Image (cartoon, rainbow, N blue to C red; front, side, top):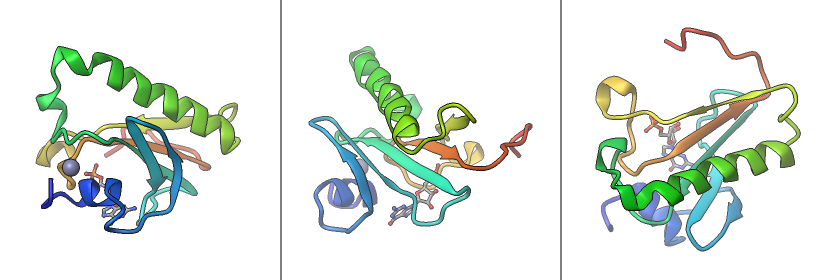
Length: 114
Ligand code: 5GP
Ligand code: ZN
C-alpha cells in the first residue's frame, strides 16, 4: 500500500535499521526508541490494526511472537526480560496503521504502562 509508511519500509523505499527479515516478516529498530532495545516486528502483508485480523492470520501472528522470542535471545535480553506490545487504534496508542509488535527491553518496565 503506497500510502503506508511500513509498507514503504517493506518495499525498501524508506530506509530502516533492519535486523531480521524472512518471507513473511520484517524486524527493524524503532526510530524513536522508548527503551535501550526497541524493535518493531511487522508482517509484510498490510494489515491495519488488530481489528482487521482474520482467522487466516493466526499462523502469521504466532510467527510474529516467535520472531520476537528469537530477536530477544539474539539481543541478550531473554533472561532479564522484555515486553511485547501491540497498540490498537487511537486510544490504544497506535500511530502507524500497519500492525506491528513492539519488542521493548534493556530496562525495567513498569505497570500499569500508562
Ligand atoms: P504505534 O504508536 O503505532 O504503536 O507505534 C509506531 C512506532 O513506529 C512508534 O514507536 C514510532 O517511533 C515508530 N516509527 C514511526 N515512524 C517510523 C519510521 O519511519 N521508522 C521507524 N524505524 N520507526 C518509525
Ligand atoms: Zn502497510
